[in-house]
Length: 526
Image (cartoon, rainbow, N blue to C red; front, side, top):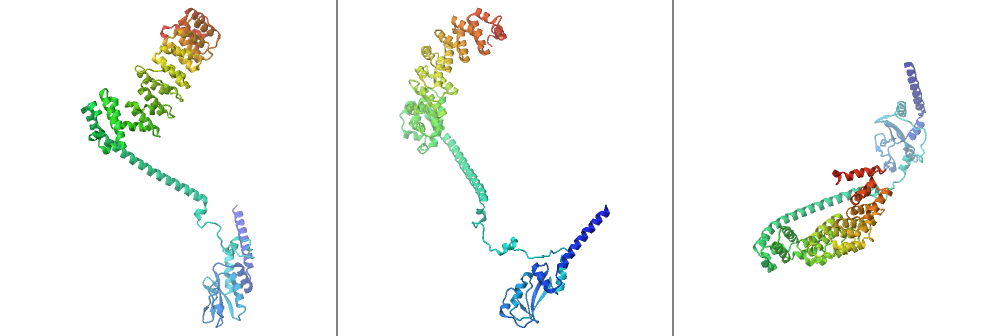
């Protein structure tokens, strides 16, 4: 193996040496041919040449020619060292018209040598592999670098600034700058808002301290009649005129008066309301109803409601059907509290559905005012809004309005499923035995929710027809567990014998389980 590798290496070395000798033999042996060979090479590393003229004088044109830059010597003239041999023919042509004694000297680095020495230097470079000779003239049309050198420069880009000409880089940079600017603006804006908010809170605390003592003095040192006859200027002894002109001071004063009004009773509430009106704070509350911001409108409605500003009811009604949930809810609550005669037309005309929260809130208010104000609940049955009609039926049940059972009977056949279920619950709660016919009709309904509500009502209001309908339905229909259990409970309450017939020996095991559940006293309320 070692012998094979050695032979291979020697073969490659021999081939390389043979190729180098072949390249070296191409270098001409004649001085003229050697000069032409150098013209073909153009440049050889470390090799240069100079022109020597042994005449005592030179034509003016040659002396001034920047290509040669001749310098005078003792033996004649000598040019500057030059490395581009491709210029030899052009230079020699400039000497052709003048009878001059011209010679060419070669230099290897800074040492002058004969043409044989120059050839030997070039042969050594080729032999050592430090230089690759050129054997033919290059085609300029195929050499892009040479072609580019001979082509005048003309800028390809239309823009002088490279940054702008690269539109992708420009767009990315512009976007980054935009976000930086926006972020800086946002930070500055947030800082300004925070500073304003902190100043506002600080002023509020200062105003609260200025309000507490004067307001306490008015409430405990002045009678209601004395406050009623006081002029606006009389209050300046308690609240400085310059402070009463500031909106923030008035807002803090309103909050303090309303906070006290919720805690006070009797004559104190009258004093607070009088102070509120004497300081024109009521006008500020009414003016807030015209604001375009929903939270300010809601705040104004709360203030009107708390201070019993009946004179503002006209403006309040305009917000009873507002698009905003909070405004609408507070407006209705204010109307229910302040109206002398609550006809509920403002509630009937609402086009938005009532939420569970709204119904609970309105019910609390209506329960409170129903003892002192006449309520026309029947107008709610005429509403085009289903949730309002359902709420009206609930009010009949919650308030125990037996006088409105006739109205419910008149609409029971025309209303929708949800209203019928509410009517059945109302009949059950109020004990409306006279409406057992409607209950029996609902027992036969295909809708299980309605049939379930009818079965619950029939538990205490049912008659013989109810028993027949229930027994027949248990025998024929495939019922859900929930409905079957309620029907059997009602049947057990109305007719025990029919209950036994329906459950004893029944092929359905569920009926037996329900029977055991109903008859077990420990599970009677489960």
